[in-house]
Image (cartoon, rainbow, N blue to C red; front, side, top):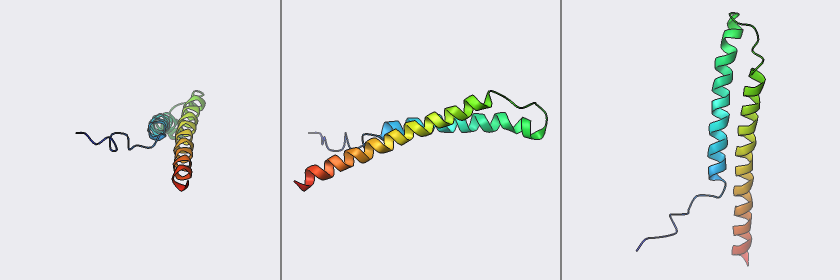
Length: 83
């Protein structure tokens, strides 16, 4: 028989945290690749870099929502265990 305690052992916000981290990392790498030629003086300032930094912000917010969801689930679990 299968042990069901290990199949669902991840915290509720883990998916959000991973997704936010991936989006943030993609935005950070794209921003660095975009800014490097500007800093070297080979291209003018890229105006779409603001969109890339917004992508980083969205990733940060999604990961933060995952953290808050995990904390809330932990509090509910602790409250249930104390009763």
